[in-house]
Image 1 (cartoon, rainbow, N blue to C red):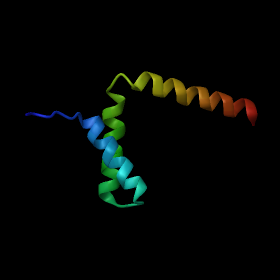
Image 2: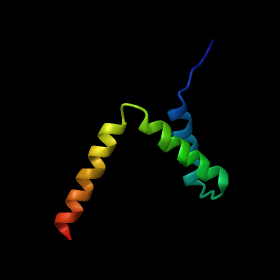
Image 3: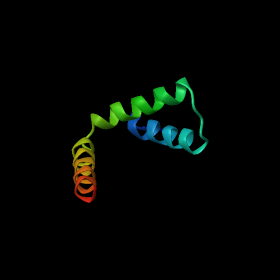
Image 4: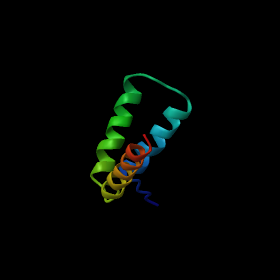
Length: 63
């Protein structure tokens, strides 16, 4: 049986584990960078950008 796993899912799980264990180093930075890079190339980029803009607008109105 062949199991496929996307790079985004793999790097997301690895980034979660690194953040949970509070590992800091070159490998952690590389994993988090690649996770962001691959996530930006997926269909999730638009909703993530919209959510960040909405949060920034809300914070701008509060402050």
